[in-house]
Image 1 (cartoon, one colour):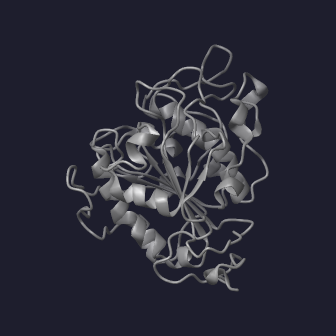
Image 2 (tube, rainbow, N blue to C red):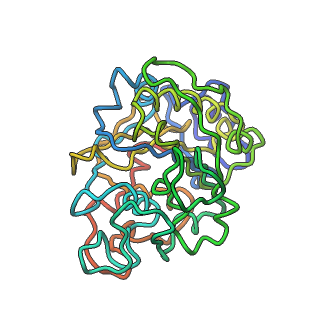
Image 3 (cartoon, rainbow, N blue to C red):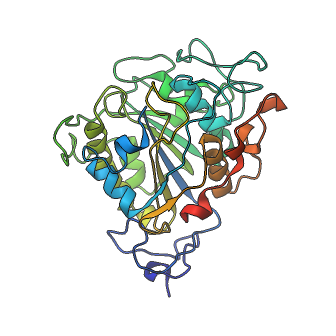
Length: 338
């Protein structure tokens, strides 16, 4: 059988073709994903417990995606010894630590970032997934200009990890602004305005010009930080169909991940929301494997054909100083089928 009908498929170069409307694999037949993903799209949201989003009535669209695709039920918010704020989580997810050496900032590491200060205040010199990918693009909603290192309006620099890595000499080119959408905060299943959006990401998607690694951050209003869960749900419902309807997605070349940086500020150690989306993911798939941001970083590296693991994704913080959580080298791809 062809990949579209449920057989192996998935070879890069366009040999697989899925029909319009394909989301995840609901055929009843297994699909084998390609050994290397051509485009990995990560969209990061803020500060929610898993049960507040996945399956919740006020997030009908994200909940429907979870039911039709895949969820890791034990995606733990435990990468630090204490509940550090947003920025360290973004840095750990993209580089394996929040320090140049060590982890967390307990006095044993160097250059550790433990607050939410702008990239004008402090930076990291470590390697990140942005360096590792053959190409990358970061789309920051509401940012005033390319690779903005200071917070302004509804854009928060602390949610833009690329701006903090001094080794990214192409940040000004690849870390770009997209116009903010206005999304209804109370009415469910309401497209945001304008719909469809018109911006650099939508253009790259339509022109079949996606980078290998794509990182997207909504505004503080649309990422559940300041706005409501329903507001963010409407944001996802506006963008996700554009992605899954794209040429690259229907060729089986795209994996989309909806991730959250951490639980609510009053919580620590429990599961955070997530949804894994690709034509190879079996509809309704769940995994109870313990994972964290570091193991997800490792899975990105594996999916993109990268054999050098960063920081705790390798099992040890940068410089070998300190200890990573035990699940940090787990690879959730097989468990979730992507």
